[in-house]
Image 1 (cartoon, rainbow, N blue to C red):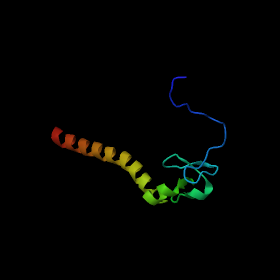
Image 2: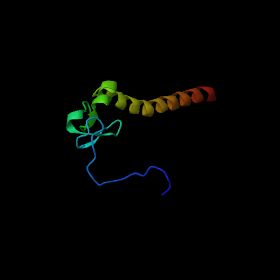
Image 3: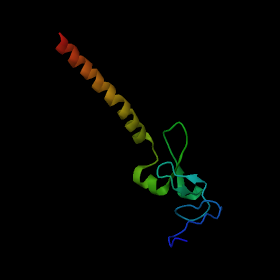
Image 4: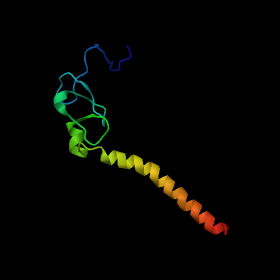
Amino acid sequence: MTGELQRVDDGGPLRCSYCSSEAVGPCARCKRPVCGDCCVLTEGGAKLWAICLRCEERGGRSLVGGWALVLGWIAVPIVLLFVAVVVLGLLAR
């Protein structure tokens, strides 16, 4: 024994982070285990995901903000490359 706290895994089912009942899966945003009563289903995606009530209060059920962020990460570099090509084309004349 090292004198440190030891983690004990009893092999039992995961418990909900909010109400301590048996969890059915993780929250799609914070990854905490949640039960069916402590989560809501997402809207606006191709697939349904469970989001805990705390994450829903902070960000809502919609995934539109996440998709906009992904598209921004793709579209902004493409636009910057286009502008760079146009500027270099004008300077080469």
